[in-house]
Image 1 (spheres, rainbow, N blue to C red):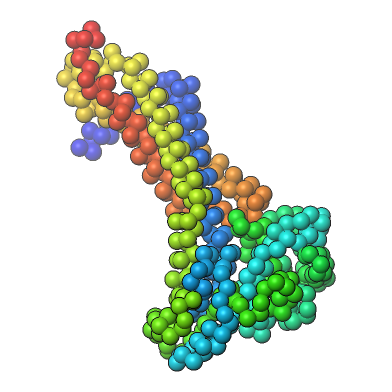
Image 2 (image 1 turned 90 degrees about the vertical axis):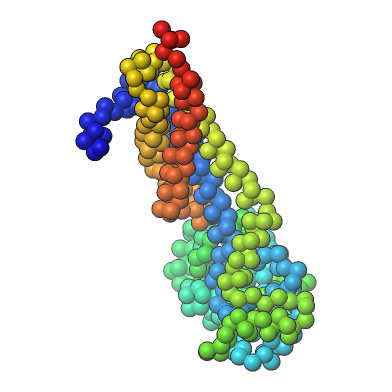
Length: 388
């Protein structure tokens, strides 16, 4: 068997390279379809990642939210006394509030207005697993002082360099003058261009209409050895029905579920991926169908010589597999470059993991195989007597 495979004439490859212009056209079409799929999947993943970056960084065992909350960027508030009540539950070590809001500020470098997410909490009690932030919490004890996300979308290079040299920068938000005392890195989201982290006291000055007694999130930490699921269940039974307790992972999953089910962006990118897949099928079908028609006489000769349909179909599928593999290679390199350009231009976390490359390669092989199956329909019904 292996000897026969070794000695088999690579008819599919010979037919493809015979017409180099057609081969180049096919490879370009496959690469285009693959790049389209790569970009759609990249943007969709960036959407999910960017909108859950802060929920993933929360430093707590249990997260308390309003039952009306939608996601981190648009949380409903709930009474702070719920956190005091939570402290009565056995096994709870601490229950601290987080305040979240969105405001326009002036870019300290070019003075343009842009939207920023603002997160406030007590600097004496770190709320996030962000080493850069936690190492600068003392700076936030100074009124009207913030830490700035250096991965924010926009031109901030000179300001960031200035702050990293140990200096500060100032800018305005509404009627408040803010001092940027430090930087950290998380990244922009689709909701806002960047983020500021500050103290709960400064947060209230930035949002005078917000009431200190109403908080966006509650971060609950348990004593050592406690059963997180048991405490979460107890909290949901003990507290009023205007709040919901989640384990850390449940909260992150809830954020993802909201984005996937309640926003149109995920649907749009999924549709774009399917369109790229269909475009690839059409392009490869046109190439293979033309190739079959051009060599119909040769295929008929093979049939007259006694070759079965399975052999002829194998030739067409051989062409499809070759096209899928060769067309996929340049698409990966181009997509990687486009990812880097897009990340630099938008500050979104768009990267190319190996798992996505494997997924797109499998999709490419399936895409070309479907095209080959459609293109061989005419070949299967061909009768040598009709052709000659």
